[in-house]
Amino acid sequence: MLALALLAAAPAAALPATCDAAGACSARMSADQLLAAAERLVQARQYEAARPFLAALAVVPGRALERRFLAGFIAVETGDIGEAVTQFRAILADDPRQTRVRLELARALLMQGEESAADHHLRLASQDRNLPPEIAATIRTARGVIRDQRAWSFSFDLGVAPDTNINNATSAEEVDLLVSPNNRLPFTLDKNARARSGTGLTGSVSGSYRARAERGPAWLTELDSQFTIYGIGNDFNDASVQLASGPEWKLSKVSNLTVQAVGLQRWFGGLTAQRQLGVKAGLQSFLDKGQRVGLQVDGRRTESGFGTAFDGWQYGAVGTYERVVARSMIASASLFVRREALRAAPVSNTEVGVNAGLGGELRSGINAGVSGGVSYAGFDAPTPMFSDRAREDLRINLRAYFGLRTIRVLGFSPAITYGYTHIGSNYRFFDADRHRFRFTLARYF
Image (cartoon, rainbow, N blue to C red):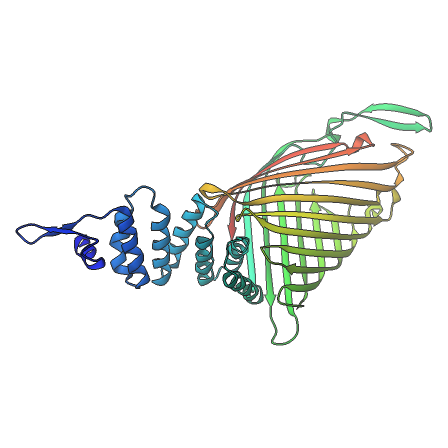
């Protein structure tokens, strides 16, 4: 069958055939000739005739990319979208810079109804400076259509989390207490007041739903929740849920404005650590070459089960800039300011800081990223037992992520996240270091 296909697919001059006395004919082809014949058949939409050529190319070194691409293209055209996605992802796992392959993957994902994933790959592809202007314009239009039509997204993960500081406690063993204006005495802390380590069951859930109207703004509802459980009734179990809902206006083809009511509930050790109600607003604009800028402001009334001293108001603003780099990575930077105007001045504070990150796709199907930030927090008044000066903190956070999307078990992929936080304070009692790992299986919809 292969010999007959070869003879039917190419001119006799390019494929010299030899026949024996019984009439059986054969022909020899180079790898380039095999590939050229397969491409001609695909272009002519003779997909079944092209399959034997692709099977022959499977044993040819150095032609895996072209073979997988043609196999994926055939799968799309014949309705086998799952196989197409598999083939295109396999190519990008070996070389994330293949823009044409990424565009085909985005097309296949759209056919599967995975708008969020398709938009991600279109965004990466848009950064390629060699794109023809008409293709770049088509990508922008496609992304706009996706943003307008995407109704919902959902993801969750579940795993274990070893942690060196599950109680968010100090790393100091001894602190100085101010007993008079010029007299300090050292006190050794009980072990229960210092950082404790542990391993918990951890998970997170996030999702959004956008309800569209024939006229007027859409209505966007978002849910974010996470938990870490160290045992039934454990004093350091930590869980939170936040719900935001409100109208979203489309200001232009690339910009939108969202105003939402927001509520948050956080439990720590079975107590209500925070209960918040307020409003947040976000302005977002999608620029060329995979760039995005955003501004979010919010104001919330907060109450705490740990005492009325922690009741009050919280205000915040954050500006973010993102762009695609190296065709498969996304770099981001943000500036933020947060004000906690609480009932007790010693715990009221203003924090300003900066965060930056880089993440995306690497070879072998690896998704990885690193991020970090630094901030300064100044408090309104001293805590008399510690100092006659107001508290000041320097806060550092680092995060590294490693995921393997090529491994999927019932749609779940493994991931490892490492996080480190450091607080350096002029009050030694608030010096703290925390190392945390999360080994999870994640599912994205």
